[in-house]
Every structure is written in C-alpha cells, then in structure tokens.
Length: 394
Image 1 (cartoon, rainbow, N blue to C red):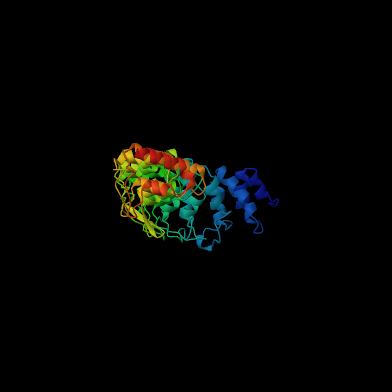
Image 2 (image 1 turned 120 degrees about the vertical axis):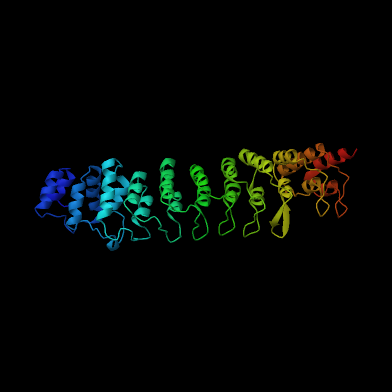
C-alpha cells in the first residue's frame, strides 16, 4: 500500500502543480515503496500527462535513468508506459524525449531491450515508432536469434492492424524479414505456423520467400499444407511464387506427401487438393512411409471417395495403370484391411464402384497373379464388394 505522504497524495489526486512544488521543496518518494505500489503512480502520471513530474523524478533519482542497472522492466515506468499510456501526439513526443534522458538505453534486461519489451507489452505502434525514431537500435535479436520482425510476428492476441504496423516499422528500419532464427525459421514460417495470415500480404510484398526451408527443411508451403490445410494461405503463397512440390525436408517428405498423409477429406482439404492438382502437384511422386514408398495415389485410395473422384477427374489418370508390383488402383482399394469396420467396408465398396465406372478392369492380375477380386475375398466384411466385382466380370 502506498504511504500517506503529501507528494504521493498529490500525484494520486492528479494535483501535479502541488506535486511539482513538493518536489522542488525536496520531497521524494520513499525508497521503501515497493514496485507494485509504484506502478500505481506511474500509471497515474502517464495517463494524465504528468510528464514534467516524471522528468523531475528522473533528475532526483526516484526513477533510474541507467538501463544497465535495471533487474527487470516489469512493473517499472516502462511497463506502464508501454502497456497503458495513450499514443497521442504529446505522449509520443514524451517517449522520444525520455529516451534521450536515458543511459545505456539499448542494454538488454532479462532477454529484452526497451524496444523488444515494448513489443512484448503490446505497446501502441506509435510508441514503438517513437522509440525507433529516438534512436534505439533495431538490430537486437533474442536468445532464439529472432530479430525484431520475427518477434513482432510472435506477439499474440493483438489486433491485426497493430501487428502489421509493428512489421512495417521494422521493415522501414531495415530489418531483414528473411533473416532466420536459431532453427532457421523466418518471419514467413512463423506467420504461417502461428496462424498470422493477416501478415502474409506485407511479408510477401516485401520479399518473403515461400520456398525457403527452415532447419528441418520445411518451407512455408509445407506448414500451409501439412499443418494448416488452408487454401487461402496456400493461394497467398502461390501468388508470390509456385510451390516446389519436389522439395524434401529432413525426413525426406514433401509438402504434398505430408498433406496427403494427414488429410481426412474435409471441405477445405478437398478444395486444397484441387488447387494443388491445378498447380501441377504430381500424385505419382513417392515418399517414404515406414519401410515403404507411398505415392499420392496410395494415400488417396485410403481417403474418402470424393477425394479419389476429384483426383481422377483432375488428372485424367488411366485407372488400369499398374505400379511396380503390378497393382492397379482397384487392387490397392481391394487390399485395404477393413479392421472389423463395416463403415470401412462400405467406403471400399464405393471407391471400387467409382473405379469400375471409370473403366477399371477386374480381370487384371498383379505380380503375384492376384486379381482385385482375389484380394477382396480375403475379408468376410467385403462380401458386397466381392459381389460387385463378380458382377463386373459378366
């Protein structure tokens, strides 16, 4: 609790004329006041533009001007300034003048400079700009080697316009938006991965590279496809430059192979698959899955029938084309294990029916001399499917 002194009471009651007189008479804020209670005074002064009082408190030592001597910015004058002070013209000018009064203004405290702490505190963009204009260095990187653009992208739960303004400020200050952090992620990787799609236009317009790989070999396209399944994000990236569908990460996966593995058949995933096929993604390409190589078609036969139909119509694939083991798409569908699921059996029936309508030949055998019917007959739950195939032979 704040002590009951004339100076403190004058500040709390916003009588700054009296507070100035008391300061000139030698009154100070007692050293015993803790930082939690001091925060009330800083908030009152900043919100009510008692800036001349703050300057006097700096001059008399109540507010330390030497950043090197701070143990933390939390609950300091700067915490209040960045968190609650309005960004009107007078307040912005105060920020610029205050920086000029500081010593070691660019020093790091608990992993933050004043500028990066302003981002953490979600300061008004005009305040951040004022700090830059006052000469604070913009080349700071945190322990993860994130520059100030990366740090701006990682601020959560703020309006899109504010975050865009942060990025714009540091772009104008010359910060490199393609500079990677310690795990080789750029601002674009972070924006996609952290659902900051509102930042894509400004990043892409200023040279962000969607095919640039991070430390795991993953590109922004990879995160858009394999993690977000978002057609809008993919389209924004593809408008900048085409996706490299052959690019592989450290696990030898492509963005397409991981998307195919993860997709379940939602409306957005279906839309996204259509976009990928339109843009030249090849379902013939393979990637390792455990000890086997799986193509896009190998994944599709396991997915909902709507996805298989879309791919067949988009690519014009010859349904009787066989892989290296002699298996056609019909073989692949009929070999899938139902795992005691009647629902799975019905789905296989639908996919087989689709393939038959597209011209699948039930008489074709694989390298083991097996027809699709032979494979289907290994599972009692596929009785309807077997019936469908036998009727197709007639």
